[in-house]
Structures are given as C-alpha cells and as structure tokens.
Length: 111
Image (cartoon, rainbow, N blue to C red; front, side, top):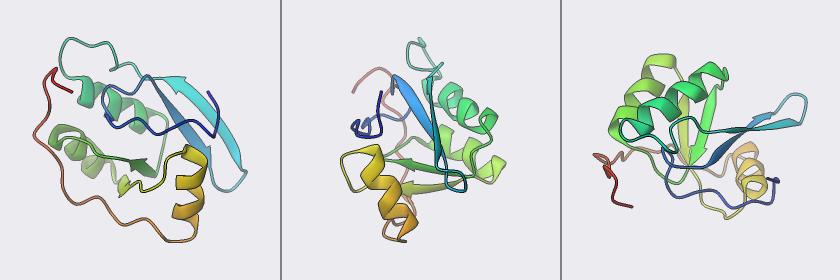
C-alpha cells in the first residue's frame, strides 16, 4: 500500500483506507472492516472512517447509507478525479475536487 496506489471504485468494498493528515503530511493505511462483510459493507466502512476521526473523505463514489453516516458525523465527501491517492490528495489541497452530491442506492454484492 502506497500513496501511488489507485483509489478503489467501491468505497464499501475497498480493501483498505488511507488516512492522510494534511497538517503533518503523515499517512496511515488500515484495513477496511466492511470489505468482506456479507451485508452492510458501506455502513461498516463509513463507521471505520468516522472512528479514524477523518474530517473529509475522497472517493470515487459511495452509497446512500454511507453518506448518511458521513452526514451525521460532519464528514465532507469529495469526488476523486485522479487515479492515485497521492494525485487526489494534491487535487483536493488545490481545491480541484468537487463535493460528491450523487450517492447510489447500493450494489448489494453486485460490483
């Protein structure tokens, strides 16, 4: 797992997450507890992001259930436009990423 890794297209089923501290430039990767879930992957994944005390999420897309968790926790969600985590973080810091406003109803095992 490196900063040059591609951003997974499925938030809830991403194998791991990157937490990046914009103040200290410290990055930390951790496994997504929702990745192998039979159901509720998005909610478990979203709760892991909340537990990591994130203020912002950069993702390709996410479901409505995850979005509700983020909204309740005050986490802002932005749509990624680049391939790697590093490129997306740089784009975010430059103000180049738009807020994610469309949330899907969930794939329920169909990716």
